[in-house]
Amino acid sequence: MSLNSPLEISRALMAALSTQMFRYYEDRIPQGASVLVVSNHRSFMDALILMAALSSPIRFACHHYMGQVPVMREIVIGQFGCFPLEETQNRQQSFFSQSQMLLQSRQMVGVFPEGTEPMVKFTQPNQMGEFQRGFAHLALRADVQDLAILPIAIASLEEVNTNGFPLRFLSVFDPSEPLFKQAGWHPLVIYRRVAVLIGRPYWITPQQQKKYHGRQARTAVADLTEHCHGEISNLLRQGCY
Image 1: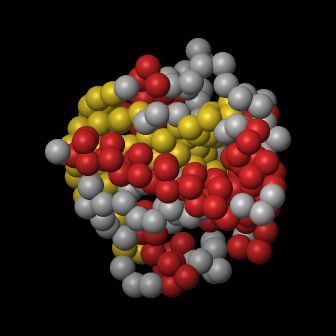
Image 2: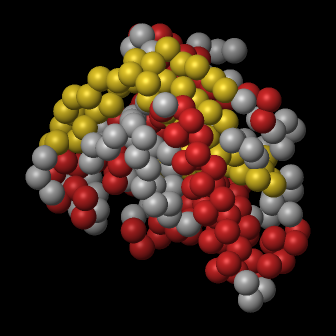
């Protein structure tokens, strides 16, 4: 494997930051399938952690601004293979089309359904916000066979918290994001010891897709979203205590 691969870079950065990772339930990782990884999100390290835990590159959807900021663009997109979403008005369609193409080619796709907020507001390790439902719509409408949703909890056991840069600095690159208009600093959470707990995969069936394309679309999306949120929440409590 090339030393320039996302997986090798992830492992090297974790070693440089002296991060110890403990992995649980690795037998739940689907084999020979398309996998949509869904996880909680508090740190810039989360993508690194998940790739190292699954021993596989993961193509993460990332905020539009990451494709605009010099240096960050080269690292996040150029080195790690993340794909930035488009500006607000085209964001959803951009996410669907890019993710489906990657899943069809059997690449792992990763999403953080809590969105940007937990990255710009410091939260406790055992806290988790509400999930946005875009990933559930993707899973139920994507033309992908053998698709598994893999919920994963990242539980911080020991960490260092510091300030990165002023939030208003990011508004230069994405003026449409209201979170970047507030005062304060972008927090940086650096894990020293972290547990990664892999949940039970949720397989998308033709029956669920039929339900989604019929009159029960809202119920199908809500059920999938709540299942993943509940699974990760339970694993997070297990990991943090």
